[in-house]
Image (cartoon, rainbow, N blue to C red):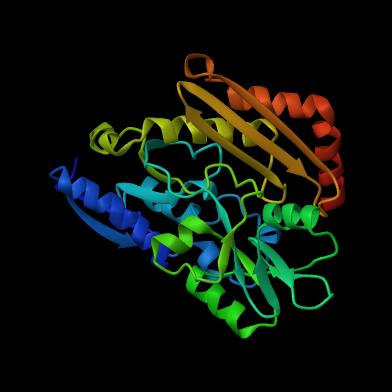
Length: 312
């Protein structure tokens, strides 16, 4: 292991905050660290919707290349951005304790919150901004007729765009805003919206053969978080969901049992299939796969096929 562990991170405020958490934990354990800033494809192109860019891995690819080329020793990712199959030669070294998994609606113009429910000031449909296919589909399922606008950029850029627009609101990950101290007062948690698999979790990866660095990261690993996000990502992988598939999943551990809730929706939100399964932790290794297979057997296969055909 090198004298100084080089921690790769994107340049956004949120990414640097996450990498700093990893750096602080390693420093407290007696390791020397430095941050290495790397620009990702997702940070360079801020206009094309993510689903048109082939979003899978777009925020992680540049860091993975740097890792494989030995320019860094560790890469820190928002785990929801990480493809379910890691590149050859890269391994998961730790999953930090999860932050909030929830989505937030930040108010824009012409909207108010009554009993924690968004209400437009006029009778016209909502105008809501997000680049996430998953968020669009779930919002349209609950509020059909809404107009959805694309919104890209880091959290600061997106908040600025919202403030300068005529949109009623925009949807953000709660963890992203809270970690950098930017959660606006005029926002509400969308408790009914199921998150992206692994949303709110931070993943640390290293080179597969670098066992010393892997060992250094092990004390950071939160076992319950790792168990939950594995089930959620297994659900996603088994459904073979990509960047343009509205798939959501949330797993939780309670009193020695693992529970997962997952769903899949059509792009326009008119069709929705949901599954909920629970088992003991000792028998939970395949829970995410089992949940996905159940939803496929109950119409999910046809819905996935319809989604693929609509994209073609």
